[in-house]
Length: 82
Image (cartoon, rainbow, N blue to C red):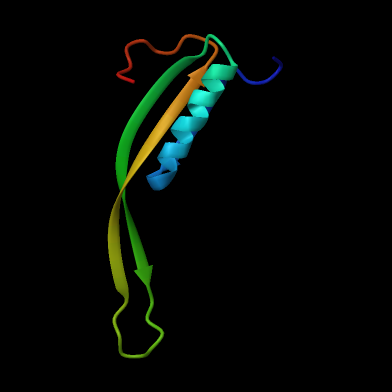
């Protein structure tokens, strides 16, 4: 009751499933919440330096999904696609 009027949950990769489940649990406990969801993706580049001399550094790029769920007691932007 005295807390914030809005909560934002963000997750990437395999944590998306758990974040959606948490958002659904919150919506069941607090009636009348408004939700706005946006999804996207980003590229993450990992670099490893070799332990042995003479080897080149290894660089890999991963394509990772991400989600942002906004729950609010107040009405959110209705023109948003989420």
